[in-house]
Image (cartoon, rainbow, N blue to C red; front, side, top):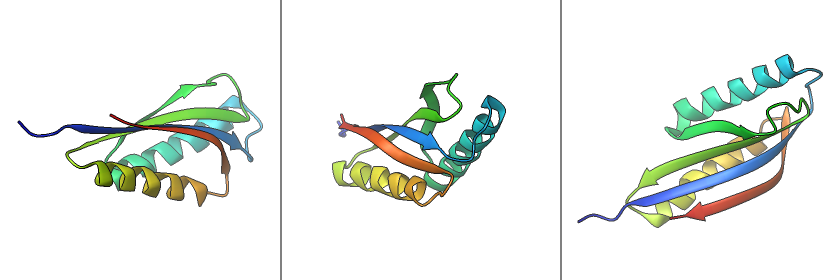
Length: 96
């Protein structure tokens, strides 16, 4: 039987350019869409849905190699960190 590795991460984000829930949702949907297509991960907003200045997103990848899971998580975090519309203020990583 092969090994199943799940890499999961939750990120708390501050959103700079948001003045309403509508603007926040537009920014978060844009980021989520880019990440899904670029990194082939499962991702969603998981908390702070009613706050227009912050958000918590969670994402996961499934692989057979712990190093690959760590690499995907690092690449996703680097991509988000490069987006000037948001700032990562906290994160939690789990490799299962």
